[in-house]
Image 1 (cartoon, rainbow, N blue to C red):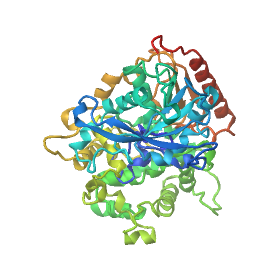
Image 2: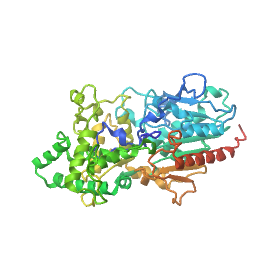
Image 3: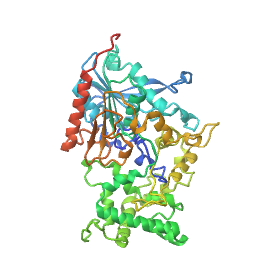
Image 4: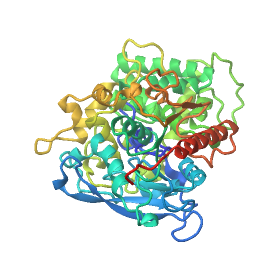
Length: 536
């Protein structure tokens, strides 16, 4: 997730979610409970010492289980920047985390980000807390199903509240800027944005104001609407042709002979994938790529795929087709060409895989091989495992399923199913000492919504939401038309996730820069309304 990330994430980037049947290996790419790639916060603005944009690190004793303190504590890392801190009693902006090593995201505390720009305007400091059990904020060396019981929504929310109330920050040793004495702003994007909204709804009172960006607050089991938004972002000729291609693919997978199915998979370069769901997910990679696109990136991977489908690859002399496209034969050939030339090479990065030297390995698309380290590595460095745990245990779900057997034309295969994705939970998290994951105990996305309120969550004052018009997760977010709340909602035209958060990167795009200015101004107004508690 390029968003901040509790998520991805990711919820995001999260959180949170991969396709139904997509590889666990590449799950983080499509998970709002995972993070978007942190390259846009690449720490180029960070100095480890005095001076402008100086970012410092610290650790905090966090409870392993907020409901049972006897289980002990672990060291939770955080980073802070006080370049614009106005002194005693000045505001604090706390950035909620995603399931990603926080070291890569430390420069979110500087003014290249929206949280940093808010802090600059309100004369505050920025603090970023690493997600529990991620990076060096690990409570266990081995994240078995038993140990993962402490990675849950209750503890994630409580981490932020407990930290804000009890931490002693190096730039405020006298604790003049505690939440009762100074306004704290809680900011998050993607799954972290959902955490922000849920703290506002379920644990109000600690933070004064809230910024929730690209937040999938409505957990969804069958998340087929994800693909509807991606289709909006595609040229009409491409979406028409891709639907024709997928109908052809599904026909062979459903009624073709074994030889016909093998021939089809071999054509795409995925002859090793015996399970139709794995193959369907593998050829959907271009679709998943859209949520990673930023307006400042230029040429999207999704549109590159479309150009190949329309036979407009580099140096092609083919004429540009009209809205009807090029038809099945040419579109299928172009799609296969794109998969083999642009998608497969380098996709399964593995230093010890000899085939990878040639760039043609497809081992990581095979979900049935449980000897792969995606299943066997239970160490703290396997963030993908932690992201899947949130989907399987809490259970946020967000399985990106196709149209189903009775669905209409679609840009993805109907062999992307909810059941195929859910089956991964049992492979990843076998029972240990009587401990299992939430889905196995009857939890579901509905369980989460019953507790949080989903997209109808009850919010307190001083929370704002920011969404991207072309974010595939849009249907899981709070909309401006939601009658259950009075919170302001910004909808950024033509944007995917987190365009407001990467404020410096998008500063040259007028309508996004305007939205950032409005958001900063709104936060400043709310901060100016703060009055310290009488007892402080």
